[in-house]
Length: 189
Image 1 (cartoon, helix red, strand yellow):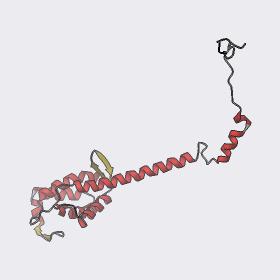
Image 2 (cartoon, one colour; image 1 turned 90 degrees about the vertical axis):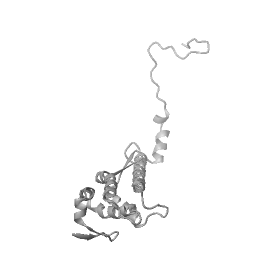
Image 3 (cartoon, rainbow, N blue to C red; image 1 turned 30 degrees about the vertical axis):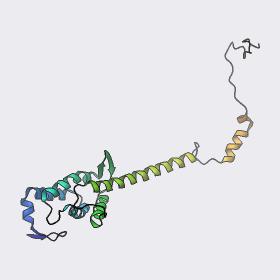
Image 4 (cartoon, helix red, strand yellow; image 1 turned 45 degrees about the horizontal axis):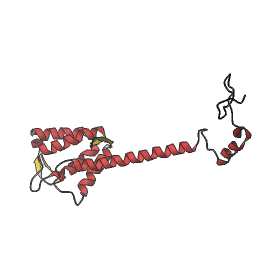
């Protein structure tokens, strides 16, 4: 069965891919990924294609083997930090990169580092937003006061002006206490 590559227009036999060890493993790996990621991944892999040549099965397999565990786990590991990234975010990032690569990006790409950096930034932004929500919730809880409800300033002022609040509570002195000492060190009693 002859197929046309939707990306580069090259014609190839599906049997060739299946007979080639790396091609077969690549196809098997693709089928293990979430379906939403497969087409964007194929477009993304075009960025690795050397000029005047096709991308080798072994190269496609190696690049995909690096990404597959992270895609399946819905996370990105970058600079010793793990970020949560959904399959949809993976697909969006690969599509965005393949459809409109940055002008300063040198093609063909050598590694998945640029994509992983993009996704790490997405993860950092999500973490920052989650942290901001937690801070805001903590502020709202602290504003509610320890009584569980809002406390007016007038209530607080009234509490401090009541005689009971103004009167200091003194504890009873210990048994045998003879009172404060004067400067000479003798008791007044």
